[in-house]
Length: 101
Image (cartoon, rainbow, N blue to C red; front, side, top):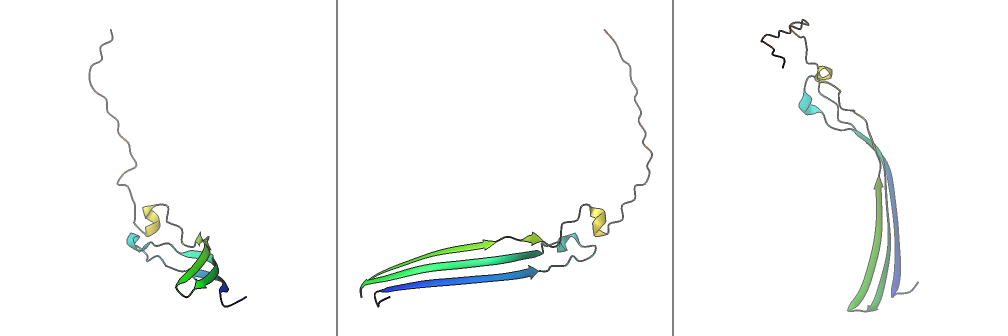
């Protein structure tokens, strides 16, 4: 354009995968894995009115929408904890006196 006006345009796009495997039998190792397309764009305009007065304007857009690649386990048994109840028997005992009025 001219020495007093300048424009800038920048565009960046990347698809990435973050892998964080779960360590068997360790609930503290659960981290999220992510697969996401990332987009970033910037437009800029600079106006030099005088050597001491510069107007610089930028507008930036960023977007990241991802999917979890490692879903959280549904129960502690999924972490390898052996859950075996001592008994499946249920005992219920009610004792006392009831007075109806």
